[in-house]
Image 1 (spheres, helix red, strand yellow):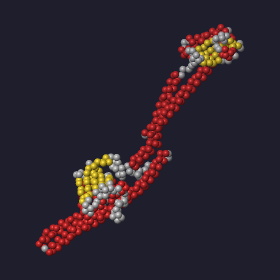
Image 2 (tube, rainbow, N blue to C red; image 1 turned 90 degrees about the vertical axis):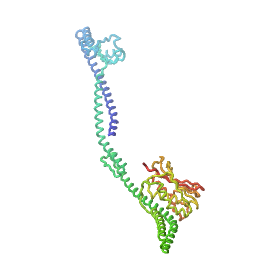
Image 3 (cartoon, rainbow, N blue to C red; image 1 turned 135 degrees about the horizontal axis):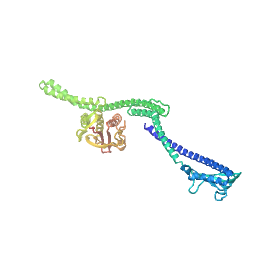
Image 4 (tube, one colour; image 1 turned 135 degrees about the vertical axis):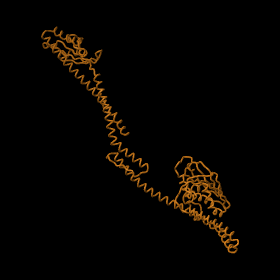
Length: 492
């Protein structure tokens, strides 16, 4: 409807201009017609008076002719009818008087030709003068002049203006109604359908279609829009299939990386389990040899069995594959649960792990297994980078930070986020700027072939990025490395 109103308002000025021009042209035509009628009337009247005066001259003489013309002049000038007094001036023209008319007009009258001219000077400017010769006995004995003022078209102009205004108003109303009705039918309804279709598409319904009922540009637009949506629907299906495949491949990759870590941990756990197994075996022999102390030996066997069960359960829980489940988690609790799992790997390399929680309860929305995998990859790398007798520091603190430029998560790209930093720092040899620049690239590793897949840090970055956070690395040769895992605070 808005478009129809705009169309009506756009057409209306042109129509008004046409009507106004027609009115002006009509007034001009009327003026020309009035002037032509005035000339014809004055000529006819002057000729009639001249013929009458000539006949009176021939019949009863000059004095009677002049007296007759004087009575006619008095009738029009001093008569009882105002309309006649204002309309005509009739007078006798003595051709023998040189100042009566210019020489050219007197010569024309002497030849029996009527004269016509407009007054252009004085109070009578615009008056029309018609002069006809008076003939008596075959000679021109004088002339009769009939003068008429210019036509007063003011009343006619007022009538024309009123009629034009009325016509214009009716035309405007008619044009507005017709344009609105036709616009609503031919333009408004199709566009409303396209708007409704666009809103459905914006809401995610790519199956929305409009039926083109017209064979004009709007119908063509509707058909092209439907074709575009057909292509978008096919592309969306391909993207969904591709996304599902990518998610499945990514999950397999993460699980493979987790199993790699499990294998690395398991090799250390095997050594760790050797001690409690020896204790269990020895105590079992003592029970056989000395039944009196069986209760004491049985308690030790139970403690060692619980210890081995706990180690194996932690390893199995970490290796188990399950779908992502984001829930409210305490980031400090996740970190403290990871450290015992890696204790054997750290002790085997004689590396001490220290955890400091400076944030207290650090509540985030996260998948427990995925975040633990990311943190495990960071700590394992730190342990491997540390020298024998070194220390790996894991610190949790509150933080307010802006997303780094290289972050792949685009939500709130310019906003300052509140959350938690989980820093893993080693005191190893550090990395050069060239290595640091590529540290998150998939399959990039500085370790010998067979010792690393090169996926640990890349997988960790993907996991953190999917949780709305980021992973940053800092390192200098000879001063160790620090990896900072940032996760946003849980919304209240």
